[in-house]
Length: 101
Image (cartoon, rainbow, N blue to C red; front, top):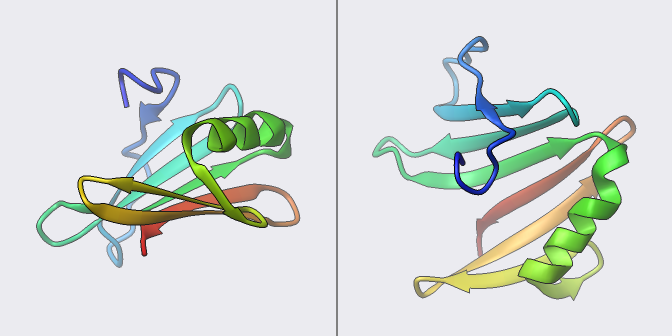
C-alpha cells in the first residue's frame, strides 16, 4: 500500500471481531479499502468503497489494468489464479470488489 497508494493510511480505530481485516482510509478523497484475511492472514477478498467524485478515475484505472468482462465487471489472472473485479453503485457511494473466481 505504501508504494502503490501512499495516500491511504492504516486505520486501527474501528474493530470488528466478526471479520479479520485491514482497513485503509484516504480522508482527502473519501475512500476506504478493506482487505479481508483468512485465518492464515492471506487476503481472500478486497472491498474498495469510494465517493462518486472518484468514479471516472476508478473506471479509468480498472479499464487500464484489467480486462473488461461485462457491465461493470473486469477480470485478471495472477500467479495462475483467476480473479473477478466488480463495480457496484450504491446510493451514496460505489464499491469495487476483488475476489477469486
